[in-house]
Length: 231
Picture (cartoon, rainbow, N blue to C red):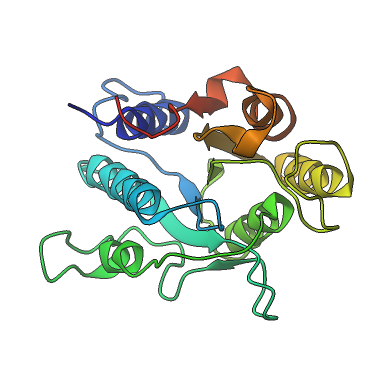
């Protein structure tokens, strides 16, 4: 049974190829001169099974992009959580900077596949604003194309900065995320959001509506998985 989350990521890949290449067979993986940074949620609400699904989805995306025979997208990989230990609320993973050399997925994994495999279970709350800002900083520093994307994978609402509890109500933590998203969009970056999970006890649809209407670059840049990422 295919994973709905991975299916969403493949459609996302097709979107990027389509936007980056207006020539024939643009959806077949022939060429895509684009830069995208994928930010993976490893906050306290993510369990080991969900993290594994996230990682597999990112590797599925890399597999799809690896089929480009002319120009591959440059991909970077980051994570976000608020550990409260002074190490920052989001970061590009070690060796996860933008590159079109993905490595190999077969053991022993190399390159970006190894970077993804090395992502471990985290803890702490959710700062979507810093996740977006860190991704945009990587794009600003290293992107080589005019087609630029942030892929934000999250199972919940922001609740940092500002100690927003479960994040179910509006506050600075949401404004902070929206401001970061608007700044990235103003710089020419498209933001793709992939939502999954149960919104951590909030009214159903709260997280989905926030990611769709306040963070993503529109309906065509929003993807929904179900609560356990299974098809």
